[in-house]
Amino acid sequence: MSGNILIIDDEIKLLKLLGMILSQENFNVKEASTARSAMTMLEQYEFDIVLSDVRLPDAFGVELIKSIKSKYPQLEIILMTAFGNITDAVQAMKNGAYDYLVKGDDNEKIIPLVYKALDKVKDNKSRMVQPTVTKGFDQIIGKSPLILQAKKLAEKVALTDAAVLLTGETGTGKEVFASAIHEGSDRKKYSFVAINCSAFSKEILESELFGHKQGAFTGAIKDKKGLIEEANGGTLFLDEIGEMPIELQAKLLRVLETREFIKMGETKVSKSDFRLIAATNRDLEDEIKQGNFREDLYFRLNVFEISLPSLRNRKEDLKVLAKNFIDLFSHKLHLSSVQVDPDYYKALEINDWKGNIRELRNAVERSLILMDNNILDADSLPHYSEKTIPESESLSMRSLEKIHIQKVLQYTKGNKAEAARLLEIGIATLYRKLEEYGLK
Picture (cartoon, rainbow, N blue to C red):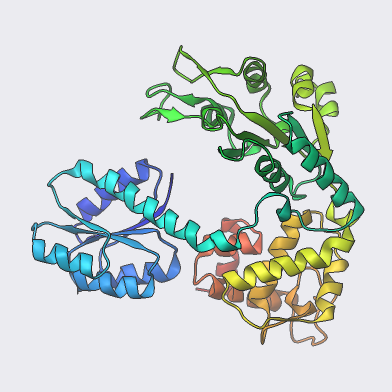
């Protein structure tokens, strides 16, 4: 479990100590020593929890809570007081605080209280989005013959407990298919657990899958349950299985054969009953020839293969997919009455979409940010439109890029990490461009 926490305290030593403690629990922590700097951070970043001192140089914490909750009602706030003043605590709760702590009273209370507050935040978020969440095979959008065939196969295999191998290019919707198969199975009452095998080193991937005991390796400060154990009764989805190190492939094969596993640093054998769905954008038979993938594991995985089509081979679905993303992001961005010019869809059709549905999703989100007067047109798609180069010679590609970056930063309220994601560039590249264009 992780969340974003803002700590507000003018005692710098305590501020740093709390930051270190919460960071070790895998929370993303920001620190502020004044109410003013805290409000600036709240405008720039999205937080789940605020941990605030009751006495600040430029504000009274109890009143600060009232101000924060009026602007950011989704946040949970924990007040810290060095005085144990029950009056402050009661008033803080009235103003919307989740709870309060007495400094130095019992430091062991901080972590459990933060976790409880985070649970409440996540419960509230899930209730907010639940009415608009589409599950099962309704997630799979399109009427092209290729996607309908893939969907038909998925619906049939969902009724069984067979292992499934999803193949296709990056961004074709393999995790959506895996989730739909889980929802269509008898295991839907249990967890659907997913991991991308290409995102971790061998050691971390092994820990994530099998779990570990405290002290199993440097940094293992407490016991950790692995995803194989978490998937018990449900479905384990291994994305980019072709990227799994060959040493781990042998361990995974044993789990599939025996349904038994051993945590790192432990000798006791544990059991887990799960359904496996794997996905890859590689040719596993070619990987076997090159010695990068075990043939016996391939036969275990490839009980039922479903090949997912690329977007360029199902362009008749492009418009309906784009409309779905327009509706999705219009809701998220609180946009109303968005008008779509026919040229917008034409601009989408001229692209090859090498990143497939994921690339289309990002393009639609970015174009909604860049559009003017609530009208989506070809100019809203600078990377894909034939109108990328303007008729006016006064607008160079350099100036267009500067304008583009400015608009995205305005949308993210200065959050550079989020801006880099939307711009599809690295954070270091974004900082370099900000310096190059003199943007602050």
